[in-house]
Figure (cartoon, rainbow over the protein chains, first blue to last red):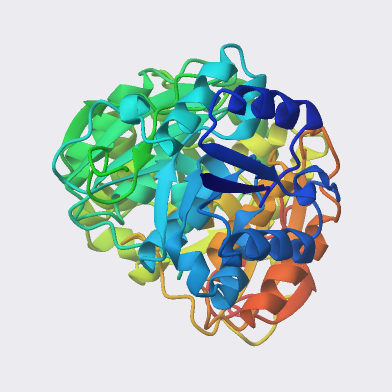
Length: 274
Length: 274
């Protein structure tokens, strides 16, 4: 039996999402999901105050009975609690897998930088609410049950990390940023203008000079601007990669949609999962 | 006679704005304004291609006949041409004042970092289109004519720099970033959600440990979110300042509005203007 604790470091999860995820999990007898009540807390933008979110995250991480911590939803908030979280992690927190993406990439990146536990870019419980969202959730449950069919197909022999572009841009240069030298870095974005995507690539490419390459996931829900940007998101990624000497390696199947694939941080572990 | 060259490193300027600025400038016999044709060029998002914008900027900066370069509009684009611009600047470019804000803060910051010329956060020609925009433009023309009445009132004895928050966040950590140790840093923002403002403060405050203090300008046109953030922009600025040990010094009168004040980078020069 693998026990998975679920908490919300950023925005609150809808109860309906938890209920639907639990119904899907009934098909996985080897998995036991525990939604922490904090997932449904609400205080302004957040799923509870910083103290409430931090306490829930630490309960999930430090409890030796759990094998994994699955982040329920992004939406911003991880950056406020990441540093105190790292400071209060106990030994049990280092023996877990942490799964999520988007804003919770801040936590994945910070944990990866300190080599605490394992970190996996993966869909989150809130994704069940998307069209075809059950498939996204089943992909994660498959992965947790030892079926690696939902892993990003483009992974090679180099270590990898996957981030939301904005989340990575806010992480880079801070004490929470992991060393990504030699890594293939996958980025995706949602709900940003293409000029903002270009600006974010300016920011990250100048600070990732030693990465092995860049792959571009989905850039979705781009707002309509008063004029067209003039090129698409892949041309932007190519432009800044070439300008800064980073190999551009093509697309990846990550993004804020139901197709979002599993990306285990570090060296590919797809064949090592038990 | 002071001659001022105007070009657009980011988005194009409306011809109407140039015409209205020229009419206001008729009241300033000591000033001569030259709008470069590139201000009105258009290619996708930008006021002409990178090559076109760079060439115009260099023409303005390297021409010894001009005393100042005034950026016509922000809107993103400076980051694409800042590095080649610095590489091709000639001696005459170092004897000028550069004025603008928003996206063009990238250029002001990069020039300030290399101590090339003087840099002044100031309204731009495009601001004439705002309600009461004539006052914003007159404030800059006053400044250029030696009348410092429009200078930000909160400036003290420490060196200062003023930035759009997003522009500063994209600049920090890059080779274009100036050393702001000991500076009072003024930031303003427009059209960003408060959660994004919070995220930007997380990013910048962790990388400005040695600044003398932070002042918050106007945070305007905040989009309506599906829920309230839970605190206002000043509480955000205080939170991250306290958390990172930066003195929070209060508000400043800079922002994306007609009230936007003049902030000469570095040590206050208000009384030194001839």
